[in-house]
Length: 141
Image (cartoon, rainbow, N blue to C red):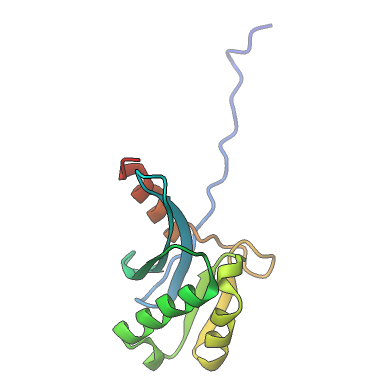
């Protein structure tokens, strides 16, 4: 009746999204940050998959697509990304990634917008999610 000889099968590791060059995959997301005085703000981040560097960030007290658009435009201007041949922008399906962001992406022909965890693109947005996790872990609330 002992269970000591039971061997649990190892879970298969998912292979994440790996870029082979800088600016091949950009990850964009927003996270809510709480401060000591209980105010809330939203941190918008655009991150490069290859270098793991944060390309641009914005802090706002509202969660909306206008701030996401401004943050993405900031990354494009700072690193001259409109000159590159092909970029894939990976986001979640949140409302902050629609509206103004969709309008901006429709004018940039070198950017392909991918929704993380969708049936057509089953890769994750964990690059930017891990950044938020590490940041919140080290911020004293």
